[in-house]
Length: 233
Image (cartoon, rainbow, N blue to C red; front, side, top):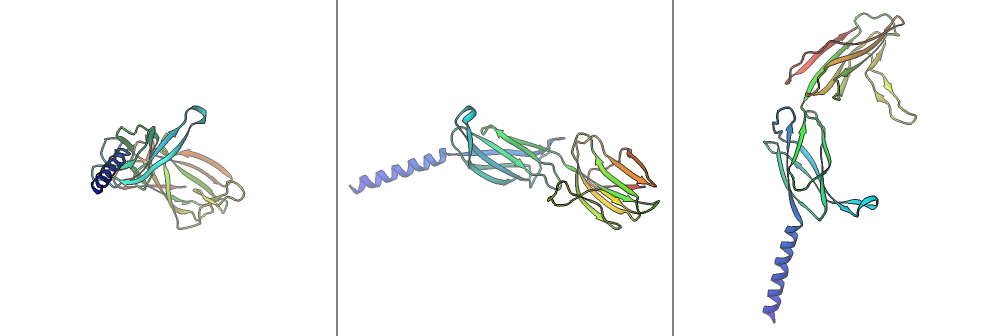
């Protein structure tokens, strides 16, 4: 009798292990630069396996498993995740200070994930009122990068502080890159995706009641350095 119990227990254990293995899948992928296919190390990727229930209008999804992984020296990642039937992968590579974000909301669980991102070029824009008229002087600048979105990362003020905008009542104040007064001496930092085809400063200013606006010439840049541009007005 004891032998029968032991054998039954062993069979059940083996079946359970096999069943557990069947409920897991290996998710593989790679984070690489879009411009040249170079793998990018140390990138955090958020993975989520979702299961679809029902069909048509009444269908819905539920989360089966989620993980955060980090790419290796070649930009690759691989991890085991819990799986069920009728599932798909959602993946997010968040934007950081060096690379753009990437997101897939529904991807075949049996295919390798390829996340194509762009390295950020760094720009440092100096804004100086070098010929002030009076306290009503006004200036606004922004980075123009064509169809690709640039991201302002910091503002430093060595003269008057930049202005704030309140979108709607009750919302917190939001910094914007405009200034009033004669003592404007500031630096604005931007991250610009390397696939942008335009690198210019868009500006608006007012002096002595006269408003003018325009766009600078193309700003020369180097990939692996902070590129400076002086906007004096």
